[in-house]
Length: 391
Length: 248
Ligand SMILES: CC(C)(COP(=O)(O)OP(=O)(O)OC[C@H]1O[C@@H](n2cnc3c(N)ncnc32)[C@H](O)[C@@H]1OP(=O)(O)O)[C@@H](O)C(=O)NCCC(=O)NCCS
Image (cartoon, rainbow over all chains, first blue to last red; front, side, top):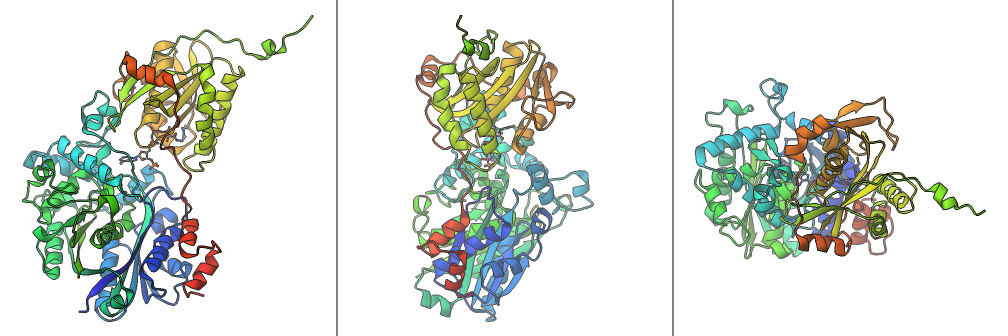
């Protein structure tokens, strides 16, 4: 296999964007071309989860490649639930690593705010088991609520720990221009004050409003290239060194112990093994915190902390910028936002910024190894990426 | 004999009891005061509402245009029995709500406009407005409409409002919904918050000056303009940009 590098990156604000989906996808693509200095690509992958249903548009990659005037490059749309983004990066990696292509553009884009929040929640719920979950009214927040309840009972996680994740990630997002939410929140405001239960009502007990990611539009892009192309660009050498993907039962209740996210564990293990690093080598990570409980659970499953001890590390401030392993310096899905199909690419965008040393105020010092976990379904399809900065 | 036409044009206002100011802690830990504003404070609010008329997202433009007209009408004595409440954080205006009294039993909710997003300031201000109708004016019901999906979620869904589709609302548009005393009592513990009396310093700061919102809703980003200016400093067209990228 050839080695694969990140030559260019681009992103839109993750927020409500009043633009056609094609524009939302094209903009980060143009930014990434400009960032890389490249003008042509061999292949485009566009990650998207809901354009057929939410925006009434199929064949998105064909539209985007033309919009960018990048024809006749190949173009493929990748739909793999909320893990579409990292799945598309995996495809891009394989295309370059195999020697088939030298320059591959991977875009993730989603426009969820075209429909109202109720429809958006329902659209995302279609990834659940159609007969065992969806028809009974299961939504992602409800699964996360049940998961959080089990986690609390088994490991002693409390509402305060969940709120601490939200406070940290809202804080990180303050320094991220592209983040959806730019408001600090405090434990007093969302947990302790007499008004806290109105400010932060239950959505899916025990999860409250601030435990949830917002519904966002947005796009992000990575350009992946071979070593030969990369050397000519005079850019920091950020190598996509490890990729791991794993799956689990479609329906959550079929798992022996639903508090174990086996697909996360397995995907992370594969990704680290391929990159030849260990979890303790990682300097900065972006984990899929669509719900605050997931940041805690994933931080354990990927190997940063022992099972059941993620919340203790959080308490000690180990996951803050400046801590032992900063998690979600971008604000994470919680505050940076979660345009589902774009999220995995957005996570990689943040890690590349961090490894390049271009993350400004939220820069993790001397970051050399970065990691992402893109969580599809309710943990039934997970893709983890490891990036290494080379000298 | 001289006729004072202005007197004829002005409505005969009832004397309305004052809304007793209250305060609450927001999610960000800051304290927000909700208080009634006097007629002579309206000119201090109008410029901040005016700016939102140009924000073409989330129905800010239409709601701001209407609020502007309603506040102006109140200021110039052209609407009967209107009241205006403002929400302030450190003097900064973050939301404005208004309404009218139709008769002793029925209130007419006009608008809720939040000038800072993501802190539920609009919902808190709306709750204060309902409290005014129910607890201070002792009315039986308030007629309400929504002009935006988030408004619909905040009022019709959160308060479980009842339909009053046969009664036209003064704002026109969609049919009326109603907050009854019963519904308000049901929502009291979960949606209607705030403490009284407001600490003196906090209240004085709010009365001191109505300061402009520091982070008001902004018009959507122009993605293409941003892209163009990045790729082509002369700002010519997308086509030119495409050609430069070698696509045409
Ligand atoms: C309706 C209105 C008054 C409600 O105000 P509010 O109670 O303060 O609530 P907000 O509008 O700030 O709530 C939405 C915001 O919550 C935040 N939010 C949403 N999900 C969130 C989450 N999971 N975590 C944290 N914050 C979140 C976001 O900032 C969101 O803003 P966005 O839509 O730009 O993404 C206000 O939206 C408004 O003034 N709208 C325009 C005028 C209007 O429609 N008035 C009502 C006419 S009926």
